[in-house]
Image 1 (cartoon, one colour):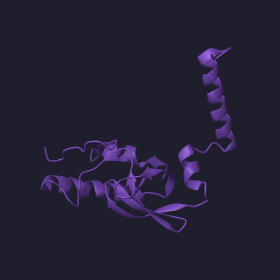
Image 2 (cartoon, rainbow, N blue to C red):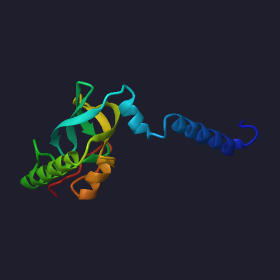
Image 3 (cartoon, helix red, strand yellow):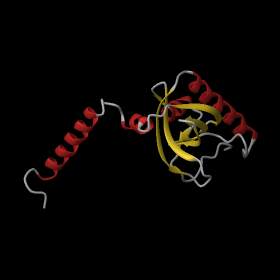
Image 4 (cartoon, helix red, strand yellow):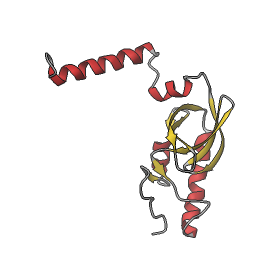
Length: 150
């Protein structure tokens, strides 16, 4: 039983607690807090393809599979068209990386290849949203991959 206020009261207190926590943290978004929790700045050291890069954070190198989107393959494409699109996607990510510093990283486990899974922002821009806006990426949640050759 929820008592006085019911579910609306619970929502209010959850939102109030979140607001107080954000204010006490200087208003920084959660992803930024995760990236700076250890006081370590991150920088991109290599763009592998359109959805994979290497980050150096406090001297530790992370092979990162970027979350939330998929780009065409460049290393084992199913057709020449997929490889061409994959190279364009990788260049789009390089262009974004060149536009500014890493401003947030939120690590979220590892994939079956041992890569760190993460959401990343460059110069304040969410990498996933940027890549989706280029038309060279599709939303991806870890299930069946898109067919770039069809």
